[in-house]
Structures are given as C-alpha cells and as structure tokens.
Length: 115
Length: 340
Figure 1 (cartoon, each protein chain N blue to C red):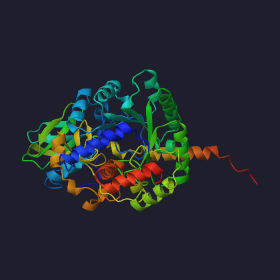
Figure 2 (figure 1 turned 90 degrees about the vertical axis):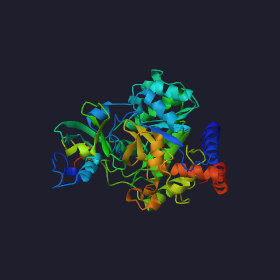
Figure 3 (figure 1 turned 90 degrees about the horizontal axis):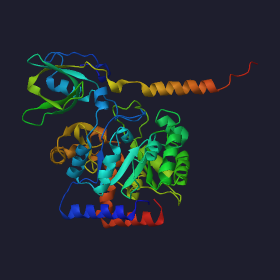
C-alpha cells in the first residue's frame, strides 16, 4: 500500500495488496476523486466523503464528479477503488509562496558593490 | 472583556438551563460551513483542499436553517471557505438574526467593503463580523500567502465599524509568532475600533500545506504568556478570560469536542471542527453515536495531544465559568481587573 502522497493513480487489487476496509479508509482520507468499481462491473467516479463500518450494512458516501449526491454504496457491493483524481492536498502552494517571497527579497537587495 | 451583556446573559442562561435539564453534552456554538470555496489558500488551512465539484457546491439556506434548529446552540459561527462568497449570505444572516441567534461571520474581509456597500447586511446586536487577522501586515500577508490582504481587511473593518456593525478579529498563531509584534497588532486592531479580539493556536491539519509551524503545548503556553501577561487596559478579547488563561497555562481544561459542532455539505462532522473522522446524518446521531471518549488529551489520541484550539477548549472554559463558583470567581476577577 503506497503512502498517501503516492496514492494518486493507485489501482489496487483487494485481497492481494490491501483489504477492502483498509482501502476504504485510504479513499476516505484522500482529498481527490476516486473511482469505485462495483461487483456488477458498474462504477462511480467522485469524491468519497464518508464511510461507516459501525452499522449492520457498512457503507460509503460520495458526491459524483458532477457534484450529484450523496450516493450510498454498500461495502459488500465494492470490488475495488481506484485513486483516479488529483490529490488536492498534495499541492505545493505554500512552498511556491515561500519560493516567490524569497526571490522577491533577493531581488529587492541591491547587489554589493565590487571592491 | 468585550462580549455584550445581552449575549453573555443568553449564553449563561442557556448553559444553566442545559445543566438543570441534566444534559451532559450540549452545543454552545454551531460552526456552519455553507461552502468550502475560498479566495485565499492559507498555509495553515486544511479546509479547502477538495476536488472542483465539491468546491463548486454549497448548502441551501434551508439546509443551514434546519441545522441551526436541529442543533439549538445560541450562537452560530459561519466560517468556510469564505462565507462572503456564498451567494445567499445576506439572506442566511437575516434569517439567523430573525431567530435571535448570535452570528459570527468569519471572513478574510477581502469582499467585506464591497458587500457592505451593496447593503447585503444590516447592523444588529446579533451579527458580528469576525475578521481573520493573523498579525501585523507582514505576518498576516505571509500567513495568508498573498500580499495586500491585510490592507484590504483593514479597509473592510473600517467600513463595517463606520456603518455601526459589531466587528471582532480572530487570529490563529503558529510557531514563530513574535509576542511583541502581536502586542503591537492588538494595539492596532483596538485603534481601528473593533469590539474585541479572539486568539487561538493553530491546529496541525494533516491536509494543510505547511506542516512545520504548528505550536506544541509548552511552546503555546510560553507564547501566550509573553503575549497576554500585563494586558493593556484598552485591549478587549471577545472570548472567555478563562480560555485565555488556559492558553497561558494558568488553567487546565479537558477538551469539549461536542461544544462547537460542525455542519457542512457532508453532514455533521465527527468529532469536531478540526478532525474529520466521518459524518452523521443528524445532530442527534452525531451526539449519540460518536465515540467521545476517543478524543481529548486524556484519551491519549495523538491527534488531540497538542491541540489547544478554541473549538474544543473555549466551551470547556465557558462551562467552567457558569457551572462552578471557582470558575465564576476567576472569570469575574479577570473581567473586572482586566488581568489574566
């Protein structure tokens, strides 16, 4: 099972690489779209925002890629989950901001006069 | 301290009523997030990292009002995302004020002046703009990762004060904050005419871009002690004096994660505003099925170990004030003397 930063693009096989419960937890924690493949072969792409294992029929909840939902899918109906969308929490906006600030500071310091 | 008497009375009578009814757990403030969209991408924020279809969505006003009624808390904070980007913010606030809820609209104030000039809001004792200000100009602009935002916020504050609105500031502090600069910042905010200020240490959101600058507990005590000891007479804080003493290490509380519950498009967030460990469909389900003993410092939960954020500890301070003689005495002394 890859670390979170490497989940983007991950297409696991349940049973060999990971259990369904582990996979759902990672999908729940993932801040990008995933594709849930059902056992009947159909699939839903979207944001998986909730899961509940503490009920008789454990389920996940999603908004699809057009924002429709919430859609409920039972754990028992899931064949696998693919991490197909961009991880929006893996961005580098803060690092980019720091780099830009540093560059601006350097640019504003006059070059030292030659001896 | 600057909370108006009518608001203090409402909160005090609410807390006492809950206790008389034998309710062990009850909410004080509803955090209502109508959207996650924001016009900033602050380094310490873990609230806005979502796919585009989620950022485009928002709650309907009717969903917001149903949550407010279901929760029953006397105060409603509207964070986000940036609530001034919510297309129905004017109607939502009017409806909440009509229901006599004390509303704190938590905004970065980039759009505040514009919205005020469009007469989207009407001044009311039930409405406060709680403007996000993380320090003096240089510090704030760095925290929000954009130059010029401090000046825009100041313009918005000036316009709101001029029009007779209640205005407070809320400041989130990270490691590296300079106590002397923060004291200068407090002077500056009070000079703008704000009603009061709120301060809190930041929380280490696992999804925030900056993972290095969150305050650990001991460091937070040192920082807040340096910043708040010998407070100037003109400083007013729009929060419990006992919470400020807690930040300084003078009081010890346990977290009250149900005290400020959060509702957004995903439902009722478990267990608190900061941690996202799942969602309940109803407020009753949140209160009844969340494993509360898994959270708070005493639980040993790593995610709670260094947390001192207001959403967990300010309700503890308020409960302590209104449910114990010692708490009432300490709060009264701090309020009357101005000493923390």
